[in-house]
Image 1 (cartoon, helix red, strand yellow):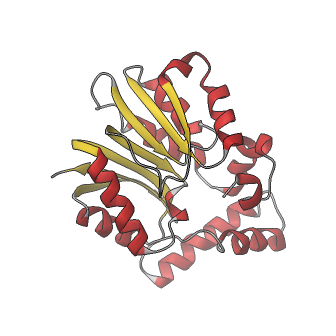
Image 2 (cartoon, rainbow, N blue to C red):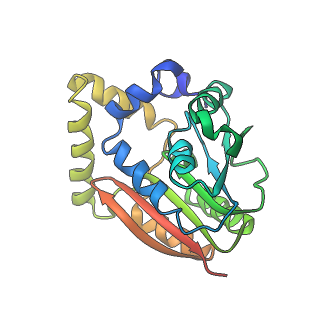
Image 3 (cartoon, helix red, strand yellow):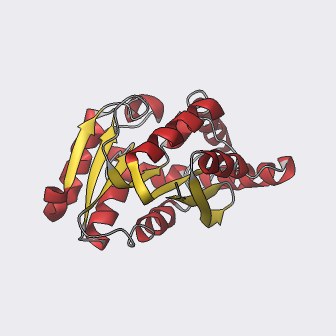
Length: 224
């Protein structure tokens, strides 16, 4: 879904507004980018749901030996990604399409930030992880940053309360509740335990490299 429809904001506002929506946004992206440094020279990293290119640009700037293919359904967001790549544009290729359906090229890394929650069912997520594993070389990396709540109901409630508190730093309680309610129509947040289990079944060895409240960064290494 296009960002203007899903988030209810103009594309030009995205980079500013996303920080009011998502706590620890910059930290999550920095951690995600850092964990791709071990990939070899001229390795290809495919980004699922590249959006405005915030993560892709971090990766290209920090790791000059990597190339990125960014996939997104929204052409306006891909335009932002191309523009912000600046001097790194030669190492960024963008492809328009739905990453659930689009064929994934052979690669050494796959990354996603706040994108995989659009795959709403565990069955669909399992199928996606299997496709990612098939595209990766053995030893390749899958890095995902997303909302992955705790399994415990009580802990999940605390984590979501922290998210609501972050939203209330920029919006009224009514607006915050409305945003979460609207997003829930399209997004589905699997628990961190579920995400780890699904990735392991697809052939990944999984490390939880960062976690704050309802959000986490997980790194899967293709082990077979």
